[in-house]
Image (cartoon, rainbow, N blue to C red):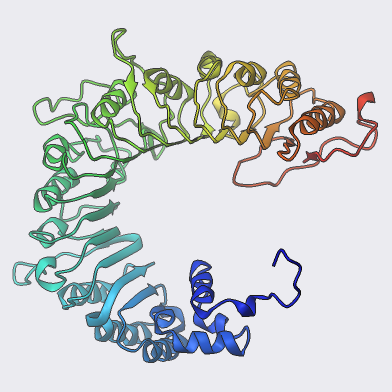
Amino acid sequence: MNSGDVSMTIDLLPDELVLAIVREASLGPLRIGAVCSRWRQIGLTDKSLWTKISLDDSRADESLIKAEYFVARAGSLRLTINRRGAGPDEESASRIDNYVLALLPRCRSYEHSYIPDQLHRVAFIKALLSAHSSTLEELELASHQALEVSFTDQQAIPVIADHFPRLSSIFIVGVCLPLSQMLVSSQCTTVFDYHDCEGSCQHDEAFGEEIDRIVSALPTLRVLKADHQYGLLFDSETEVTMTGYFHLFEALVTLSFTIEELGVTGVPTVWPSLRQLETVSLPRLTELRLAGRLVVPHVCQDENNPSPTDSVDSVLPLLQLLVAARNLIVLNLQLWYSIPSGTAPLDFPVIDLPRLEEVYFREVHEVYAKRIFVAIRAPRLRSLTLADTVRDDDTAYELGEVMNAWDLPCLEVFRLSSLADDSIGDLTFPALALGRMLRDGHLPRLQRLEVSSPGWVTELHLRDAIDAIRDPNVAPSLLILQVSNSSPPVHVGRVKGAERERNARLGSRRLTITLLSGYASHEHDEDRRIGGENDVAPEAEDDSADVDIE
C-alpha cells in the first residue's frame, strides 16, 4: 500500500483477516452482510458470528424471530444469550422464558439484565436455576430493584455443581439468593454478589456471614466482588448496626493462595499475606444519608476483635492491605471522601509494590491520596487517575506537596480533577505547583497530563508550567497537556509560543496543549472556548502553531 499501487484495496485481504477485523470491531453478522456480496458470503459461512443471541422482553415477537434465525445459522456451536427483561407483558415474557430454557443446554453464557420485581420473574429464576446445562460457563442475573428469590422447606435448593458443572463465573446484582448453599462443591472461580435488599430478607442482615460461607464453599476462588448497601434497611428512627459487615479475615486466609481480584465494601483491619492478589477495588459509602440522618459505618474487624474501635476514616487498614498484597497490579478506591482521622505510625515502613501499574481513585479525599503515595514505592506505575478528588480548605496543600519531585519512571498517563461541588470548600486555593512538578520530577515516559478543574493551579503556577515545557528535556515524552486555565487566565499567546518553541526542538514528537475553561472531566469535553479575537498577548502574532484552546 505504501508503494502507491491504487489496486491495493481491502478486497485483497484474505477472509481470515476480514473475520478478525469484524470480530475486533464487534460487528454483528447482519451489519457485515450489508457491506458487499463478498462480506455477506463471509458472514453467512462463518457460524461463530451467529452465536450471540439478543432478547428483549419489550419486543418479544421481533426478538424471537431474529433469535430463531441466528440459532439456525449458528449450527451446533454454543450460544451466548443476552436478555433484557423489562417488558410488562407477562405472556410475552413467558414465551421468551420457555425459549431460553429450551436453549440453555447449548449455552455458554446467559446474561439477564433489568429483571423486574415481579412474582413470575421469581418463578422463572427458580426454573432457570433448576434446569441443566453441561455447557454453561457464565451466568449473570441483574435486577435494578431488590428481588427476593427464596426457597421453602419443601423446595430443593438447586446446586450449581449438579445443574451447571462447568459454570466458572456467576454475577448476581440485586437478586437475593441462598448463593452459598447453591455454590457448594462447584468449580466457580469468579463470584460477583451485589446485595441491596430494602427490607428484611433471607440473610437477616447478615450478608457478611453469607460471603464467608461462599468463600468456604469455593476454596479455588480467584475473583470475589461483594457489596451490601447497609443502612438502606433502616428508617430514620432505627438504630443502625453493622453486625452483617464482612469479617473476611478467615475467608482471606482460605483464599490467600488463589485470590487474584478482590472488591469489597469496607476494609478489614487485619490481612493475611495475599500472594496472588493483583486487583483490589474498594468502593465504599462512608456516609449514608437516611431521611436527613447521617450514618457512618465502621471499618470491618477481624473475628478476634469484633468491636469497631478503628474509625472508618483511618488510613492504617489501607496501608496494611498494601503490605499484605505485594504483587498488586491495580488499585481502585472510590468514595473515600471523609478526611482520615488517624495516621500510620512514624516507623511504618515504605511499602514496595514492584508490580503496581494502575491506580484509580474517584471521590477520594486528597489526604488519603497523600498518605498512600507517601507510604508506597511503585516504580512500574503506568496510569494514575485521581478523578473528582475531594478537597478541603484545611488540607489544600496536602497532595501538592507529594507531587513535587515525583520519581515515577514508567508513568505514562496522569489525570487529576476535583469534585465539581461548591459544598466541598473554597475552590480557589492553590494545590499543585505544576511547573515545579514537571521540572523537578522524574517523569521520562509521561505522555498525557490532565489537570482539569479550577483551583489546582494559580496563574503563577500555570505560567511557570507553560514556561517549563518550552524545554524538551522536561517530561521529554509529553504529547498532551490539558489543564484548566487559571483566574485570571493565562494569555493564549504564551501557550502558543511555548508549544511552538518545544515542537521546533522536538521534531516529529509534537506536543498539543489544551486550556480548559471551568470544570472539565477527563471523560467529557463540553468546554467553552476562552479568549476572543483581541485576547492575545503581543508574542502571539504568529498563528502558525497548532494549539487547542477550548
